[in-house]
Amino acid sequence: MSNMIPSAKGDRRKKFLGLAVCLVLFTAATAGQMDANSKKEISEEGLTELFNAALFHVRNDYVDEVSRQALLFGAIRGMLGALDDAHTRFMTQEETNELQTEMRGNFGGLGIEISQRDNVLTVVSPIEDTPAMRAGIKPGDKIIEIDKKSTRDLSLSEAVKQLRGKPGTSVNISVVREGEDEILYFDLVREVIKIQVVTSQFLEKEKLGYVRLKQFNQTATEDLAKAITDFKKKKARGLILDLRWNPGGLLDAAHRISNFFIKSGVIVSTRGRKKELDKVFNAEPSAAIAADIPLIVLANEGSASASEIVTGAIKDHKRGKFIGVKTFGKGSVQNVISMMYGTSMALTIQKYYTPSGVSIHKKGIEPDINVPALDFNKDDRRHYKEIREKKIVQEFTKENKVYNAETVKKFQKLLSARGLTLSDFAAKRALKDELTKSETRPVIDLEFDVQLQRAISELSKT
Image (cartoon, rainbow, N blue to C red; front, side):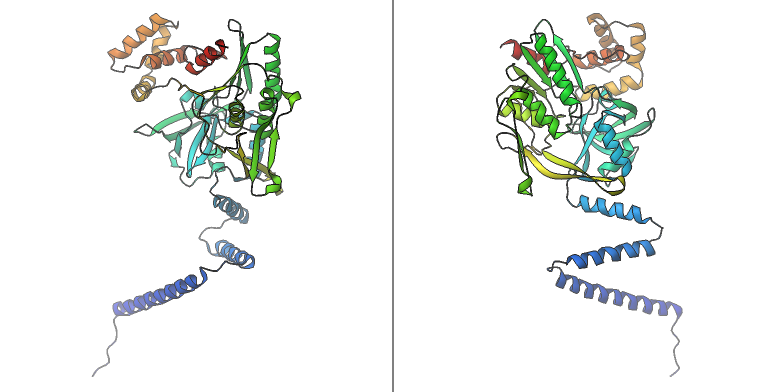
């Protein structure tokens, strides 16, 4: 019998089968080892060794060279991501500086407060008179793309970095909105965002003070106190505190502002894992500068965090009525911890509870009087986009420069002829916004603000 020489093809097949057998045996052995060890808690020493081994292999064997700093920053973010808490995050030196600038009330971007809910980038609140608010961004909008790139695996800090940029530059965001069948696309131009934290107006006819608080930053308490003092000098017989679209801010500011209206008792309490750090924030009688004046709080789905502390305290103490719609539901407290090399970490350390002992985290606060805001319906939004793209309203206002009933009727007739009918509210809103876009926005515009109308009505009964 002659010796048979295996062909190259047959040889490769044998090698492949041998490798496959080895892989199967290795996998089986590894699986058995993992199964044996799965019930054992790995020691601190073992975990450190495991981490260093992973770092070693990435640094030495990964296809591209990666800096040690980038890897370790990523590791820290991954560790915090394992907490499944959108409000806990690591910040580089640059991001830390941006946060400090934001709390001072002067920063660049779109004017939008964002968070993560169920691992989806979600709008908490647009800030009044900013690109986001003017474009129609709403609380609860889910941002699924930034400049056509998915946000699926994007950290909160990275998303903020992408949304901010040089004033005058553009960014496109794609939004999924509850109740909408199609993805909404927004082209926004970045601006320097300057927040005038407190705006106020005295309603002479009704003898009511109206004050809007846009953020609980470092100047909020002092600015609001000045407005209240001015109202008292004018003998105001009622006060409206507007916290709509206020995303929150400093816990201390929320405590002190609540104390303006509440003489005694608990304002808010905080509880965490370390019981020795639990704290109850009580009212100081001497700080209650407006404890006896009839009060209405306006809040909505964009009112979060510190706004909910104030709203919850006033509601629980029956100090005033809450008019609007259910608040956002952010009831956790973050401590910004300064770390080495200019970095920092926002870490959730506690949840806060209203005076009645209720946590509103992911629940929100229900209003005493539910009054939804006027809004565009589905057809309005679809037609309005086309009206803007075709520059119909822009061209119309070149010849019709006065906002009145006659101009509105003429505008609606034009839209109807083009098959782009808007509801009465949407037509008026679109026309008025275009005609007044270069004017300073008034503190109060009662024409469309049904929530404020109801607040004035309720106070007029007292």
